[in-house]
Amino acid sequence: CEPCPVGIVVSRRRRGACKALTWDPDQRHYRCGVMTEPWRFTRLRWRWVNAAVSRFAARMIAAGKGCDSTVEVERASD
Image 1: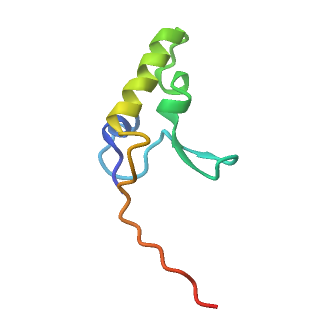
Image 2 (image 1 turned 30 degrees about the vertical axis):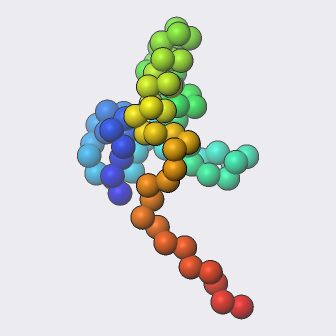
């Protein structure tokens, strides 16, 4: 498991799970915390800075542009 470029900065490591990866129970999937809650990772309270950080993170990870996962899903047999 390798974090994305934003995750490397946030997690301060090149291998392992990203510290910013957060579970969204309503959507039932993981989200980038730097995008959804940037103030948790920047520790800044200025809205304009956090909005810019969120947009930058979305661009860096190509949010909404497709999935780069290498997981292959197999249908369970009955």
